[in-house]
Length: 509
Figure 1 (cartoon, rainbow, N blue to C red):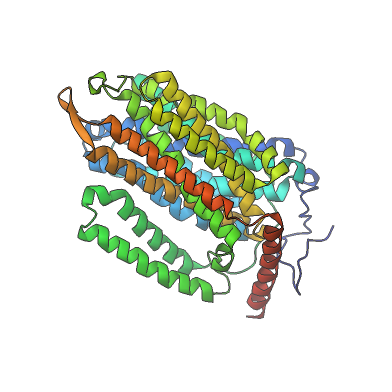
Figure 2: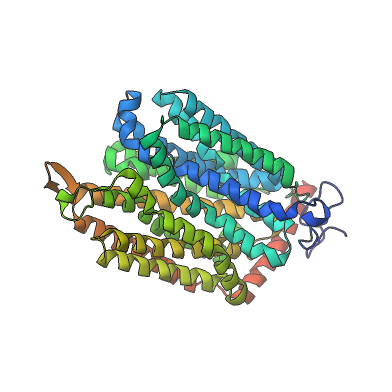
């Protein structure tokens, strides 16, 4: 079968060799192992997501274990956020251009190297460097979604993408209790060895079961655009994550925000002029894509509040009047039912998206998350209601994370799937960064003395729940403004025509 064509004088995608990009035949014609493709890619996503939260239970002990300071220890989380934010859209674009499986394997290889570095050292500088490499592997999720779009028949696509997208939440929910068990019962390096071994297994499974898609997006790699995007993201996220410690009006914080603004504006102007941009801002500015990314930011904010405060709240001492004095293992296990709910609900979300559209699924998800935080607001005095409220929020997150890539894919041409989903995943990460800053500010400033120590008040936690519920309701409002199916389809056709014209200009140049 010839390559798919789009309106205009040239095809949108460049096959490496006699491709059959039609999803109905995709991998089934190239590999007898396509039934394992979804399981392998989802496993990769879970491993990467577990890695993101791996060090959270370890953070209070890092200064004594490494001879460092609490501020230095916090970089074990911050650095993965920074590198993940930079590499997720970049590697998504590289995958579209040079091969998604190839870039996926490289990302997992970087994860393995970072894990081994952390496993072999107790020096804080080496640990931070290793965590930086681990963070770059977050691009695995949008790359996996892109591979699924290329390889799976339509009947399996929505449910498979839903599962792949949900692995970010599933891995986070599973990773916390598992890491807490390791910290409590084994040498802390063990969890990095385990992360490295799992990454290596992922690489072997991908090489064995995942075919390389012949679909390619034409053009040259935008090095200037990549640099501009990296500087903008790093400056913004550094200011957001470190602002509380440095002071929100300190020269460092304000300087980084100004740098992010100036470089971001220059980067945007450059991207609009270049023929092969790192991020196609014209595509990203379409209402269907722009509003989906804004919703992703708000959903990321609302989701992360649940992960940040649940374990900490139940571990607060009983002297606070609301804390349960639970262990770090119990605190982590409070999130496990939510992780299981995400596994169970990802196919449900796919069915909702297939029957009623992903916009309806995302609106429902945002509403469920808001309800979950209302439950948490009124039931934060005993363990099981806390777990119940956290699980409701996780259920909403599962539906949202499943619907977001479906909204993206219906609004962009196939050759931009990796970059577009990478940008959407980036927006979730930015939302999580803002959430982390807000939660830290609230819990650090609304405190009292209890049992000889300073602790957040119950009202501080309740305020976090209200803020997160507000973010979920804003996501609901944004979702309701998304164009319907007919408008999205029209926008996708326009996008294909624009891609054809851009490629024609590239070839003419």
